[in-house]
Image (tube, rainbow, N blue to C red; front, top):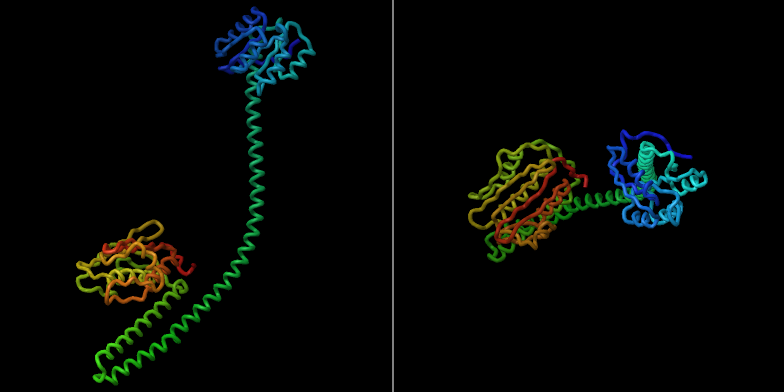
Length: 421
């Protein structure tokens, strides 16, 4: 009796396999070895032993790919050895059982324990044995591939299900978040409308209610100076002049506040302009003192931007570089680096310099560091610069040390977002 599948796989037999022959007959072990070695193109490593104990030890040390197992062994049988192997090994190798006489009950018991094939010794030929081993190895290899593919499919399916479940949960959360965001946006819109109205009210107050008394004080001072010309002591004349200068300074601060309040709330026209021409216009409008050297590239590219805003930023930074300089050989250098998404401007001077601890402070409204007698300012200019640049999607910063000049840098995106912040 045999359950052998006679399919020839000699054209592509599994190679690099270890085969363990377990049989208490020296002659049978030799026959099996020669049968297996009869295929000259097979690279199989063959080990044999005569007892179950030695077979167990060999399997513990290095489990073979195939076991040719005799049913009847000294002091035990192949089925008992199979049971021991099942308990010791995570997975049985290919097991082919050999017996002298066919027994259907033994064959069925062997198959239940995991035997791959069941052969009768008297029917064996070299080709039969090699074919059986080859078929068994091929089937085991194919089964392993199927198992891996099934495992991968299960993992993929579980991952897909988990992904869909996570997406559904995320979508539900996003719906809730969107509803909350819409509610917050509605509240923020109303709040912004209220704040804009407050700014409009403030602008009206600043331009009319605050400036009107200042104009009155200025007129009264002028009348006093005119009416009492030549009659007042020098000290009183100086006091009237001080009042006039303070009125002018206060008026300048109010105008600065108005400018600051308007930043980001006006629709500024986009214009294409040559940057070199723009910088030239800014410098001419500032009218730097004689001997003040100002350098900048003369071949800069054209740009489509909100020119009035860029001009205001450059005028403020270049004007500060001119104003805060009281040393010899005054010089300002304007650099422009063209990047893919933005322009990087630098205004470099060799003036007074700024201590590192004040680098952030100077961009705060009404913060002036002084800088010398006769230097006028409101402390609003750099605050306006910061607000314009950041409203346009850029950044502004300073690098400086006392007595070593300053470098004011800002980025100006090529695609403006002014007024959307």
